[in-house]
Each structure stands twice: as C-alpha cells, then as structure tokens.
Amino acid sequence: AQKITQTQPGMFVQEKEAVTLDCTYDTSDPSYGLFWYKQPSSGEMIFLIYQGSYDQQNATEGRYSLNFQKARKSANLVISASQLGDSAMYFCAMMKGSARQLTFGSGTQLTVLP
Amino acid sequence: DTGVSQDPRHKITKRGQNVTFRCDPISEHNRLYWYRQTLGQGPEFLTYFQNEAQLEKSRLLSDRFSAERPKGSFSTLEIQRTEQGDSAMYLCASSKAGIFTDTQYFGPGTRLTVL
Image (cartoon, rainbow over all chains, first blue to last red; front, top):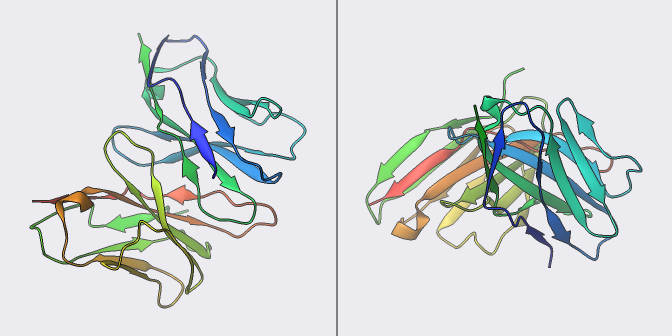
C-alpha cells in the first residue's frame, strides 16, 4: 500500500527566511507523481508544485522548490523568503501509476513569524 | 478562469437526514473527484469520475453514499441516513486528463456537521 509520511506536525519560521517541510513516501510502483498542496484556514486546497518519478530535475515554481531524492523516497518542499501569507497547513500527496486518487499525508502546520 | 465551486459551503443536519452536495468543476476538466477530510487529517479519496463514468470508488464510500455526474459536468454527492461520523469537510477536485498525470484542483469544500 502506498503511504505518505509527514513527520513535522508544526513548524515555525521567521519572515523572509527559508523553510523545508519534510515528506517521505512508500511505493513499489516505478511510476508515480508527488504533489504539494497548501490549505489556509479557509479550507481550500491550493496546488503548489508537482514532481514526476521520472523527472530528472527538481521541480520549481516561484518561491517553491521540491527537493526530490528518489533513492531515499523523499520529496521535501522548500519555501524561500517566507511571507506571513505562507502560514497554513501543507500537505504532501502521491498519485501512483495509472490510479487517479491522491493519497495525502497528515500535513504540517507552518507558522511564519513577523 | 473560474475555479471549482461547491455548494453549499456549510451544512448542518440532524442524524438520520439525507444531504446532497454539488460540485461544479473547471469547465474544460473531464475528471472529477470527491474527497473527505476530517479534522487534523489529510483528505481521503472517496470516488472519481471521468466524464459521466464513475471509475473508482473507495471502501470509505459506504452504501449510504452515492455520487453522480449525469452529463459529465457537475456532480452530486448524496449521503443518506447521516451519522455523526459523517461530520467532515467534503472536497471536490477536477482535472484535465494528461499523458502521464494530471493535477487536481480543489474547490472550497462543503463542511458537514451532523448533530
């Protein structure tokens, strides 16, 4: 069974600093995709970044980058130059092979301090 | 570009009542998903449609739950004989079929409270 583990229930970061949110995954399928979503207190899940298992380079989207280490089965999200608006719950998720469902981790609550 | 919309945003009901939620996907998206999220947890997959066909169903989707997407556009999720354990956020997402994978875009959710 596929599984996503986020070991940091809560993280604090000073405004303008970088922060890394951890995510490890477990699958035996060679084809999979990894996603990060942000969920503010309003509840909507906002897509941030995607990494495919066959992608050679780490994904980047603006201030977000994904540190993909395939052998270690980790897909950590790096947020550079944190902003107060980055305070939210962050979820790592995986889509395996031809299946369409996303499997989510338990999330990390990020708080950006002024 | 209009995002995924869900209606209602909040629903309070008494145990044993039936409730129905609606999801309108992004217009060009042919795939639609339903997830359930309880407090402090990540969303859990319920079911998925490609056009009007329901292609995957989770074991979480008990007989009291039914989802439809009759014309391949909007979808409804009905819960019959609600139980207190059904209290959760119900999230809808949509995507456009891609060659390798497709990114799911979520709506604002419907928060259900069963008294």
